[in-house]
Length: 85
Image 1 (cartoon, helix red, strand yellow):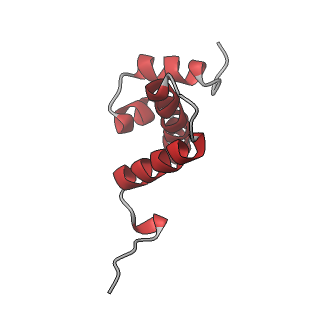
Image 2: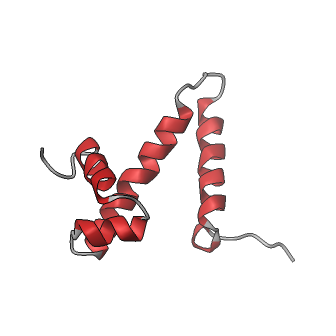
């Protein structure tokens, strides 16, 4: 019996690994740089958006849920244009 998991059954870690494998397969012979920053941005923005929606955009609650300082959250919200300065 084969134990093939669907995407919804994979852990977040496994999903990231799977996505990176696909990314590198698609690169073929091309090189890549700034991979760390690219991955962080691809994960961080939707994470912040999701948590903000879950807390009805309460920044204090969102920061607590994320485990970061409220000022750090505001900086990230500005970075990703989720609020205006």
